[in-house]
Amino acid sequence: MDDQTKLREFEARILNGELIEPKDWMPERYRKQLIRMISQHAHSEVIGMLPEGNWITRAPNLRRKISLLAKVQDEAGHGLYLYSAAETLGADRNSLINQLLDGLAKYSSIFNYPTLTWADIGIIGWFVDGAAIVNQTMLAKCSYGPYARANLRICKEENFHKKQGYEIIVTLAQGTEEQRKMAQDSVNRWWWPTLMMFGPPDGQSPNSEELMRWKIKLYSNDELRQRFIDLTIPQAKAVNLNIPDPDLRFNEKSGNWETGSIDWDEFFRVIKGYGPMNRQRIEARRNADKNGQWVRAAADAWAEKQRLKPNEMAGS
Ligand code: BYC
Image (tube, rainbow, N blue to C red):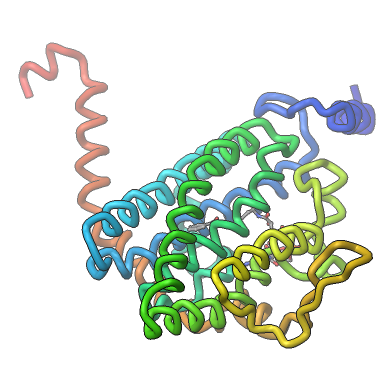
């Protein structure tokens, strides 16, 4: 079969709602797009541990500390599922990680903002995990089997993360005046960067058309952003927190909340490496890689020993 016929069959399978599995034929662009997206997603999970990890030692009580520890550990697990999904496409995990350490790989813009107060931990759960759930519920239905299954599992865990985040914010919003102000300040700083997580507006999203044709993405960046906005505004109203947008209005006709304009210059600055925390995030990963070297060397040595025959083991 020539490549044109294979492509037609591949696209017919996708139209038919079939999942593509690692050993199936796929166009090189499909493979490349998936490796790009899955690796960026994996890096985001790993870098995403840093802003929250910053507060583990300062969690206000034992219960909060336990759930934050569990959440950060879950993010590491998400990174593992995703690097494994990228490997099913022939990507080499070490090369992907080296691209991140060399500052050549993208990861979600949102993790280049600092966590200044405890309320920021609540906001990450409520806004950032909330946005991730909207995006990843779609990705759990994407056309590539291993990525769809990884997202299904990730979403189950993210739901818990979102609840713990919103509960932190509800507690602060109903607490003292100082606590309420802390929660409001956090909403003010994280609202716009969270909207940027969904990527550039539809007219400026070069990958969307191809991704949607192959059902890697089922909805556009703007459609998902709108869904997040519509879900989140009633939650903010329920705890009397204000969304920092003087132009926010409810459109009775469409049933959507309409926001003012997003500062896309800020977004492009951040993804080019000039956000408030880009340099610190990569530096922290490089240090973690250096400090973990001996653990990896010991694990490799142990694995090598397991491969030796039993009589060689006896003499060692
Ligand atoms: N940040 O053509 P576009 C989490 C890039 S972690 C940085 O629209 P696409 C969590 C984009 O990569 C959540 N870069 O791209 C973890 C492209 O650049 P390249 C992470 C961004 O792929 C810990 C260029 O801009 N989720 O849940 O169609 C704790 C043009 O964009 C961003 C995922 O990664 C951004 N925000 O759509 C808590 C999900 N947006 O590669 C929570 C998987 C765009 O051409 N990824 N860019 O040089 C996706 O769903 C899609 O890739 C995106 C972008 C929606 C992000």
